[in-house]
Amino acid sequence: MIATSTVQLPIQDSVSQSGTRHIVPVLFILEGENAGALWQLSTYLYESLLLKNLSSRRALDTTRFVRKFIELLSAVQSTETSLDYELSDWLAVYCFARVRGTGELSAQIKKKLGWKPIAPQTAAVEFNALVAFFRYSNAQFGTVELGNFSFNFREATYIKHSYRSNHNDFLAHLSTQRRFWEKILKSSVSKTPVILKTIHQPAVNREQKAIAFDELTEIVKREPNPVFKAIFIILGFGGLRLSEPLHFWQIDCLPTSYWSKIGGKESQDPLILRCHPAESTYIGIFNDRRQNRGEYLAEQYEALPRNIISNSDTHYAGWKGTRFLHKQKFSPTFFLASPRVTALLEECILEIQRFHQVNCTSRNHPYFFCNMHTTKVDYFGRPLTISNLQRAWKNAVRRVGLLPHQSNRNLHALRHSYISRARKMGLSERIIQDIVGHSNIESQRSYASDVSYLQERIPQITELKND
Image 1 (tube, rainbow, N blue to C red):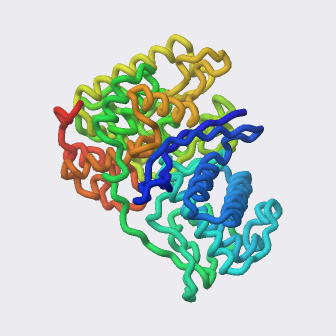
Image 2: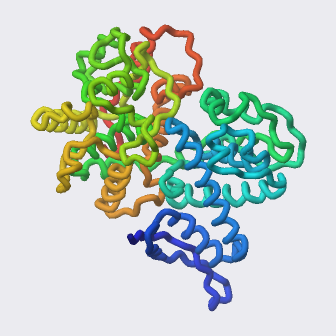
């Protein structure tokens, strides 16, 4: 197996007296059975050694730390496949497991790892090395790739070494996910190691992380595959997370007349529901909560929701905590797009629906986005995977003459672009949190009023620049 990666690296001119730094392309070719599993780490170490930012010993240490970090990820997710957390959260647990050892973790994880406690100062060195690598990967490539795992590294809250004693609950900042951590830890509360404390970073600057609007519109226009064109529009103009469209069922794309059924207000915008992959009780009938999607999948297809299957399965798709606007645990997608863009989306949806009707795909699965154009018979009509989508995005970016994973040309930047656009339109932070589904909101409004409340406050867009 061979994996390749081209990146732009700064090289200092040793001939010139001024010591001018030039940016030159470097091609990495990794060969072997596991080629590409740590290609980002190889890139980081190469540049760091070249610029003398790391000694050879520190480079070897960083490799060892990253491998141990992946070992932790694999051990936890092999026992709790539904876990889908921020990379900063995994850093917290890594530091905890290194300082305390794995004795305080669940029996299964303890058996898989068997780590003994190390000195807090040593854990601090490992932490700093990992953070430096994660920062580099996120800035250079848009994501942090760790073998079979892929993350966005956001430092809104993370764990930093400190010699100041702090005996607060170590997992206090993970309170929204505590029920999952209780499966990992033997007890629900654990004291912070004295070497560590929680540091709150400034809020994310969405504009700096957003893809250029003219690039996004050109990528959408020139994408020939209706599946990928629809997803790019949904991510960039609907504000969804990367994995969320992969959970869409065929029944989730509805006629516009259904807006009045869920919000009491009519609309001509496309209606696409974002439903919880396991707990939503919308399976084609509104206000019927007798069965959820997890139960339906088990009964009709003998299958599990895609966020619960093993993360080593190619069809795995994560799911983060989301606040829903309907009692059946779903929310409509609110598009910030001109009629021209929504018309493109509706054309794609119709073509995909015709494909499902002709090929009777619902006999095998309920999912909407699938492989429509493939020469591989085994994959034809099967649900789309994360790797399919990421590969399609890279090809789409190159199709317009640009380089992927540079200048925010990554799939996650599409969500940043949506939120940045919402702020420029004058929408309040509360409205933005509602339409993107942030889970840390406490609403006093009833479910029934939420959808119409948002519809009334989101202005109709007639035109967008470069659209």
